[in-house]
Amino acid sequence: MLYEALRLAMQAIERNAMRSFLTVLGVVIGVGAVIAMVTIGNGTTAKVAADMAKLGSDLLFVGPGQLGPGRSSANARPFNARDIEALKGQLRSARAVAPVAQMMVTSVYGTESRNVTVSGTDNDFFVTQDWHLAEGRKFLEGEIRSGRAVCIVGETVRGELFGTADALGHRVRVNKVSCEVVGLLEAKGQSSFGTDQDDIILIPLRTFHRRIAGNTNINRIYVSAGIGVDTAKVQTDIERLLRERRNIGAGEDDDFSVRDMKQIVETQTATTTVLTALLGAVAGVSLLVGGIGIMNIMLVSVTERTREIGSGSLSVRRNPRYSLSFLLKPSCSRCSGA
Image: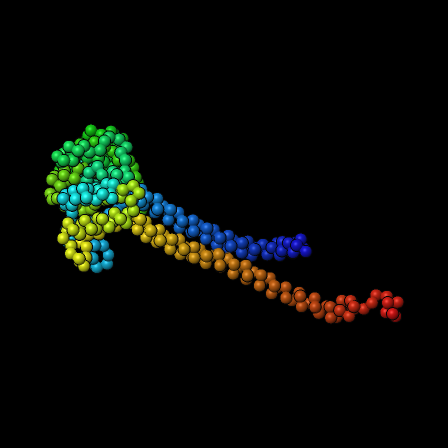
């Protein structure tokens, strides 16, 4: 029975080769589209999670002002050095607290120049960002306290300004300040937001304030939770301390924001998961179209054989040898006589 069904199927395929090929092609495209879209979506989710993991799962971002629709941080009071000292001295649940003040300036070495993000910070930056040096050293405590003109450059800046030459020990003009290169950062590549993380120059915070920014404002604070400490507890401690320092009364809204990296990762993952589902649904339409094509071919095949089936039934009625009564009629006279 199975062999006969397969034989008839192969005969039908051979009689309609082109139609069968197009039907199979539609199904293959549909299945391939589903697999490709789901794979792309899952790959994007994994890439986002990996990029976020580079920043550290125990990281918190603290910034002036509130984020969200209808809110602006442009007029919010920035942080200062005393806020950083308070956080480092009183925040027992944190492993590292790194102040960051940034500005886009022009860096020049020889005949090469580049617009680059310059960040004033200290050595806790490397802990909070889980960033290591490829060559050279970190800032010395004396350099941080005195505001000496030294810098650590990212891989993109090194490649653009120095090319294949050795950058350590050379001086780069950052805005109007000549800085000695004392370290090179390991390459990190692009972030999940599409920015080049290696396009950066780090200098001591005091040097940035005195010789580049001309003020003592701190735009952002990175806080790394202690080992085994829940980031939710660290966030609560930060909010309590900053509300006290910024004289925010009970019932008043915060004029700063604290964002947990875990929450950001969950939001990004949820977004990419929804996109994956949408891509899979779009690809599923192609598979559905291929299935409808198969149903159409089967319907057409049966419709084409309807006349043959009808002709066969008519021949049975005209020829008594193939009638049901003939089949039930005894084949011998002795049996009929009985």
